[in-house]
Length: 585
Image (cartoon, rainbow, N blue to C red):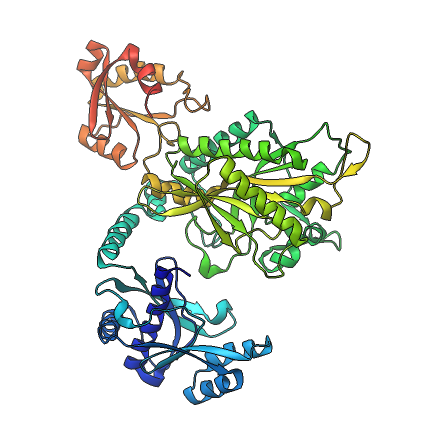
């Protein structure tokens, strides 16, 4: 844990001390970890109405604790003494946690003490509360959470905040969050008429409007076209499967409680909605004999998967129950890994360059020492060496993270930085030495012997829904010209220009854009409404249409149009309009 995480972990304990000082034995403590930008504590209040109105008072109490420069002490207790402490302190949730440690064979339990507050914790923490800089933290969140994320358990109150090394960094974060609020994809999705949700359809199940469907289709088309050029072939697989498929792949043991189960009225077979695509695609590879001459075999599909996410974790398009993936799989020989991964890296870079998110780095996601992974450790070590060597070979800016691997293999997870500085995981490349063997996949080598292929798993955009949540906020809804749901709108100054608007339309209706690929005819509309010009322009600006083409009687005489892009206007000859639009980015 780095110094910033140690600071944030300490802040969780300072928050707990402030809660204890303020509410005494009316509060029972659950868990209080550090988070990406701050900290929180899950607590249970006894007969207290706690809301966001209480945060300022609590924050002031935390400031007193920081100013008091209290020592943060670490000590250990035998597990039975630790359990006795929970009884004396009347901390039932801590008792449960320590009981679990005892069941796991732990003999000693670590504690940290700040002032009168004692908490079991492994740390590390700061040495004194005074190491926290004045004005570098704030409380900003009150919400609900179930004890140990179990909906059948107690409802807790989650009190959270943010913390940084300096006051200046906190101020910068708050500016960023103000901008993030303006860019919230849920608000923009409604304002720009991109997607909607319905309680009759269900939580986490987005539906895309015609405008939103254009957006996702063009992204998908571009992703598919880049991979098609690299030799990937489109396939199609059904959305349900017998549960036997996921039991064979290992997904049932790993993700069984996230599956939507389907019951047949005709057979006794157990079915599930597919949560991922690799087991289905594997069956296509397995459908006929393969030789070394066939490899690499490359499949791609854009298909919707279904995961029974917890209701409290759903949020806009960021976390959904129906997620559409631009998924790819490659079956190949070990000697072909380097070249094939290089191709996928190039595809990722090209796509994100085009989308204006070219500040990419990669998380090399390794396994940890737990038992939740397939296969032998030696093969994991080999696969992990591959991804690190390849990251160096292809000059990828990377960092390493244990415990982030898929259960079947390590990953190169690409991280993109958005317009306001936040980092999001986007594309992924995964090396898998195990899944093909579980399904008995083979190919015949040059000697006539059977070998098991290696698998690569790849997604360029990942979940289309999640990517759109990121991209809508990155662009603030101002999409590149080639991607905008409505690229141009012709607006008349008055009805005298209506006939000329039809002449302009004759040019637009035959225009096919070349960039980034010849993906579509121009998407445009005409606004001939009997409104004043300012109202028409306002409507177009609110929908963030890249090119607003204004025509009036004088334009008709001169055979020109006025093209508005943002705050700029330019007079363009009608004969040059097609070329002009081709060059808009």
